[in-house]
Image (tube, rainbow, N blue to C red; front, side, top):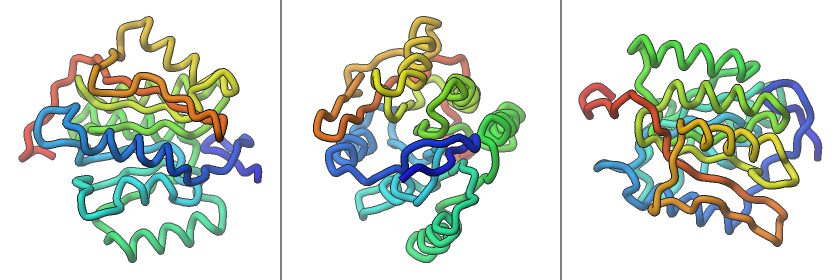
Length: 210
């Protein structure tokens, strides 16, 4: 089913893929970051809430808060907001509705000013056109050195996410890590993702400041 993405364009609907969920949970569990592991996840693309639930689900999840950016203009999105709030509590997830090129840029400005803490993990799954490059830049502006960055649909089928990932790698603003699966392609679904660590000047804030 085609739906509007975070920029009002058409994209595929996010579907829960068991293999991808396993990979993402592995990223959360593995200590690719200094102790403690991922606590604050930021994602572009809420849609029906599959990814947000993945970050929050399970007793082993150490994610304390998910910050989600999406158009939030679908009836099922509102229903999923209510469900996730009921399941995980209103303090564990927050939403920013509207065009992500604006909402994530505003969020990055608040991180720069100290009003918001940076993200431990960014999941970029919004618009799949050229705007993903801008989403990536704004995500990195609200990251610290070592933030995990994941690009969904980072395959030849969806060229823009792959190009955004390659561009930042060439620029040196992200780096590979032996603790992360650099590129995963799932043949059965034709889907895949890329992973890297942010290579930026901001240091991880202390626990008390989060």
